Length: 55
Length: 489
Image (tube, rainbow over the protein chains, first blue to last red):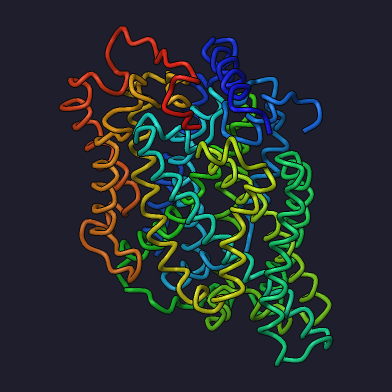
C-alpha cells in the first residue's frame, strides 16, 4: 500500500487531469437522447396501451 | 492490473475517477457483462410474481415495457455523469446528497447487493444440490446441507475469481452471457413443448383482481422496481466505458431489456406450473428429465456466479468511497469485506433469509426511484451536466458538496418525499395499492415527487444560502487533498 502522502499527490494529479475537458468521456448529443427516449419512454407507453386493450 | 500505473490501478479498483485511456470496456464487453449480470435466477422470480397478476400475452408486453422504463430512469441518472467523469454511482450521488449524505447511497448499495447476492447464492446452492439429488449422487436428506455447502463454496469461488480486479469481470462476463442465453432458450423451449403453449396461454393468473388497469399497473411496477435495483451496478460498470455513446445501447439492451425478456420464462413457468412461483429449480428435472434438467440447472449456477461477481465488484468499488478502506485495505481485502456478510447469512440463517428476502429487497427497491429523480433533476436542470469533480473527492469545508455538515437537506427531504409517495401508492410488502396507482403506477410518480421536492428545497433554501456550488461564478473547490478533512472517495 502506498503512503497517504503519495496517495494525496496521485489524487491531486488525477483530479487536475479530470477537471480539463479533454479528459472527459464523450457525451451524447440531442439525437442520442431522442433515440433513448423513443425506445424507453414512448414505446413502453404504446405497449401499455396495447396491453390494456388486449386484456 | 498490468499496464496501469499505481494511480490508474487505484482509480479502476477503487473509486477515483477513471481517465478515458484507462476505460477498457468497449461496447461488446459492456454488453456481455451487462447481460451476464442481468440474467440470473431473480428474473424467474420477478416473472413468476408478474404471473400472479397477468396472463402470458399481456404479461410479456407489460414486462418489456416495465424493463424499458426502469432502465430509462437508471440510464438518465447514472450513464451521462458516470461516463463523463469516470465515476461510480455513489460518487455521482454526492452533489445531491452531500459528501457525507452519500453514505445513504453507499448503505443502499451495500445492503441491496448483499441481499441480491444471498438470494442468488442460495439459489445456486439449491440448483447444485438438485443436480446431485437428480443424478442419485446424494440423497434427499442431504439436500439442505448441500445447499449451504455449495452456496458457501460459491462465495469463495467468487472471491477467488475477483482477485484479478475488474478485468476478471470483463473477461468472464461475455462467455457466461453466451452460455446463459443459449440455455435460457432451452428452458423456454422445454416449457412450451412439455406443457404446451395453449395451456400456458390460457392459464389464469392466481391473484388477478379483475380490474384491467390495476393488474397491468401492478405487473408493470414489479418490473420497473426490479430493474431500478440496477442503480448501483450501472454507474460502477459504465465508468469503465470510454463514452456515453458507447454505453448507450449496451446498457439498455444488456442491462434493461434482458431482465424483461428472461423474466418471461418465469412468467410462463408460473402460469404453467403455479406451485413453482417461477422457480426453475423446482421443476426442471421433472420437466426435462435428468440430462436436460441437469444442464439447465448448471445454467443457473453459471449465471448466478456471473451476477454475483459483478455485484461484488460494484460494491467493492462503492466501499472504496470510505477513506479507511480506500487507503488501508487492499482490493482482495475489500472484496472479502463485501462477501463476509453474505457468507455469514448463508451459513447461519439461509432459510430465514430466503423466506424474507422479498420484504427486505422491496424496501431497498423503493428508494432507487426517488434517487434517480433527484439525480436527474440536479444534473440536467441545476448543474447543466457539469460537476465539480474535485469536490466529489475532497469533501471538507469549503467544498461545493459539503453543504451543512456534509449533508444536503434537499436530497434527504427529496428522498423521503419520494419514499412516502411510493409507499402510499403501493405498499411494497403487501402490494396493496391506493388511487391513483392504477393510472400512474408508483416508481415514476415517486421519482417525479422526489425531483420536485428536491428542486423546491434547492431553489428556496440551498442555493440562496450559497451552498452546493450552484451560484454563478463558482469555479470549484480549491481544497487540496492533504488539507481536506479527508478524501471522501
